[in-house]
Image (cartoon, rainbow, N blue to C red; front, side, top):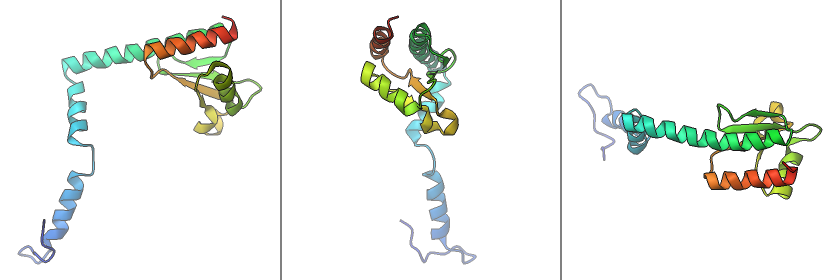
Length: 145
C-alpha cells in the first residue's frame, strides 16, 4: 500500500514510481517459471531435456514412418515434433475430417496456419507413446500398410 499523496523531496509522487516498480516486477514470468528455466541449464536439467526431446522425436518418427508407408507426401518429423502431410486434391479441412472420421485421429488443418498451410494437415508428436502407437495402428489399418 502506498499513499497517493506521498511525495519525494523534489515533489514527484511516490505512488507513480511505486506503481512502475510493482508493474515491472509482475510483468514477466513467474518466479516458478524462471526457476524452472534456470534449472534446465543444470546438468540434470539438460539430461532430462535431451531425453524428452528424444521421446517426442521417437513419437514423430512412428507417425512419419506409417504415413510414408501409406505413400503420402510427408514433411518434418525427423528434426521436429510435427509431421506435415500434403493433401493432394483436397483442402486441409476435408483431410482433417477424413482422418477424424475414418481413423478417429485428430490432426490440425493447415489452413489454420494461413494460406500457405492450405493443402496440408499437421500431426503433433506431443502425446504419450501409447496414444501415438494407437494412432499409428489405426492409420496402418486404414491405409493397409
